[in-house]
Amino acid sequence: AELAGFSVVFHCGTSAKRAFCAPFELGTMDASATVPEQDYGSNPTLTAVFDILGPDSTLILGPDGSIEANIDATSNPNDVASAGCGTTGFAIGVFNPSQYTMSENSYVGSGDCEAYVGTAYDPTHQCVPFSDSEYCTDGKLCGVDAYSYDCDFANARYSCAPGDLTGRLGLMTTPDTVVYTQSVDGPTTLIAPTSSLEDKVVAIYCPDAATPAGAFLACAKFQSTTTTTTTTTTTTTTMATEDGSDANIFSIGVAVFTGIIALLN
Image (cartoon, rainbow, N blue to C red):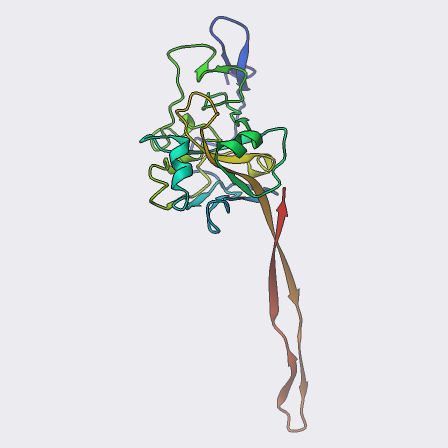
């Protein structure tokens, strides 16, 4: 109660320039270690289809925060080598689109991806590589040399930026020889609501590269999928026969039809 009306503010050093802030709000629930039931509303399932690498290569973000990745770049060893990640491994991240719209589902190599991929999506100003935050310069928050982005999802979930997907899944260390298959269940992944990511793109890139130039292995646009369910109920009519027994004239159960509608961005 003593903090009612106050806010937490993160600002750059001694200046008044604020990175982000949040007010304290008095809650009605007791503190609990249990994650409450989530209301996903109209958040869609988002799928990035990396068909340029292989027909089954996909990245899926669920409305409950789940992440599933199945990336097969074993047929693209030259592209893996060209990106030059060395032993560090490739990262998968959410990026803003550039001024150009992808006409294909996906592209391979920095030549095409640099044209379609913009800055990295970084709404929490954590200074991920190629961050779009105005408070980040060369990976430093507010110019503080001692700061560097350090995602440790297993021990500190909030240390990972919302767009850092391999921060939750693990880096792709040998994509030229091994199919990358990883998944993590929601809702504790702390990714952004999928409805806010529909216009973003996904990139597989070298996180240690100094610039985006030459850093991309592949990129893909998100496709949103919604599921609609229609339930049809019919009745059973029974009439009596001359000998007093009952005869079913017709009996039709309940049919449930689920349709998947793919909306391409």
